[in-house]
Length: 254
Image (cartoon, rainbow, N blue to C red; front, top):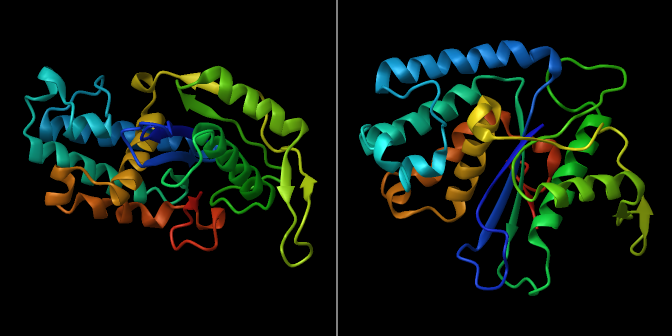
């Protein structure tokens, strides 16, 4: 699972109301084929818009912080690139995207947005793995690995290590209204691995997903003007609906 975020994780004086953490999941047997697919898509962007293979596709920067070099591509073309990227990902049917959305409005000042989002994402990855609910190949006993854009690396690692030993999960309301069970994470191997998004087409892909989910709730002016707040729906075929049965797209909302 490749992971990236959108929005600020602070609560007090934060510039954003929402924080989105997204995970792009694929089976190791599909890794090379899907990498080749992404490379071919990037070549298409180069031929059509002049966007170089070595340039990082950072969705937010495409619209709000393109920098002097990316300004050579017209803004409406950069928006089209986002739209085409979303459609391209949605056609890769053995991808699966888990999304955790935290609305910080009304949260206590000591609410740890970052940790709560990561715990929820890891738990949904664990649950979907253990129940064999991801698309594509299935092993008798699947295992997962986390590959993340650089963030609070040490904190993410400690969250993962704690959840292997102590992971309290509330009892299902149908069986008990109080108390917790300790369900340590068993299906995820190793500590999280951290990569520079500049060097990973998969992290750039999940960056796009997190950006579009965030824009669905708090679109910037340009995205709203061009109906970009609806682009997240283009990824609908590959959203992991197993992550949350209460949301039509499977978004885990905290």
